[in-house]
Amino acid sequence: RQRKNRIHMIRDGDRAVSDMDKIFATCTRHFKDLLTDNAGTGLLPSNVSP
Image (tube, rainbow, N blue to C red):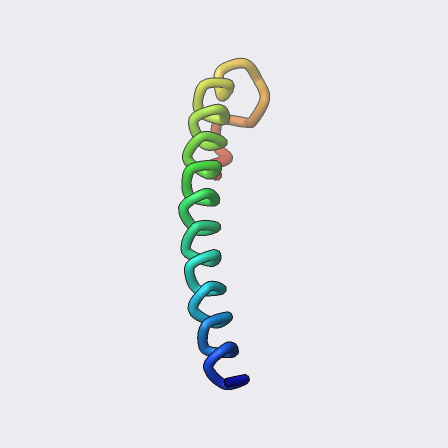
């Protein structure tokens, strides 16, 4: 019974990690868009690429 529970927990953990990857990818894309939008306003030097 305990081994079965552990496998179940690992599977849930994998699902959580994949959700976090999706959230992180979305946040990164949004952040890069913000940086690109603000690149001309002096927020970042133009020679720095994220």
